[in-house]
Length: 61
Image (cartoon, rainbow, N blue to C red; front, side):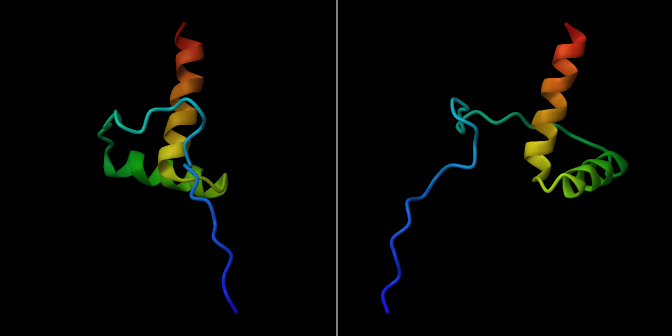
């Protein structure tokens, strides 16, 4: 039985460039908290960090 060929899709939201990531250093405790939040929301740590960043930017403005 042959498998169907699947189209590879990016996990990034539309319009997000994958060629210019931003590196953010976190302490071990901060990283553990980020991982816990991400797991609770069923997201990757990178996706959760972006969501938190976007929320903070709105509050910062």
